[in-house]
Image (tube, rainbow, N blue to C red; front, side, top):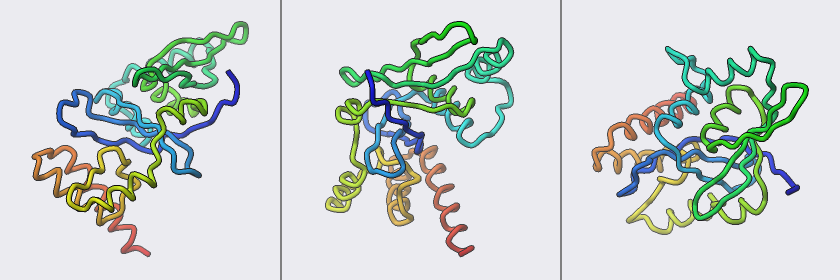
Length: 200
């Protein structure tokens, strides 16, 4: 398969939809366009990705930290992570690595591949057909939420892409639903935006 598309981690979102046992979503995409690929991940993987994004050292090494340490110690190079397939709502990924003698493709979960890629600062790729099948147009989603003021839904939009007005509405919804962990995250984002605006 050819035509790899480089994507970036554009944010983490919290999904509090009823019956959703895995509440976090990592958002992939290209900053220059409005298509996003939302991938549902577990809370521990979300924590590991968040730590790597913020470049905050964990008190004790996480599994992804151990993997990156091992690759460095044993002179193994992880070149890239590829999300290569999407089937029945499930994403499939692999890491491409070599030890200067052999190159190997190792199957992994997308969340693990992303966590490793962020730590090693290596590229993440996917293919156009995955954008076609699983991509979400964030512009359409925001427009839809504006049309439906009575039932605004921000769960699949990264918090980083919401404005203060939208964040306040999302915060009120989270508090009403007693989702205090989400409310705390939203509140921190509001504080950050407010501080930046006041400093302009």
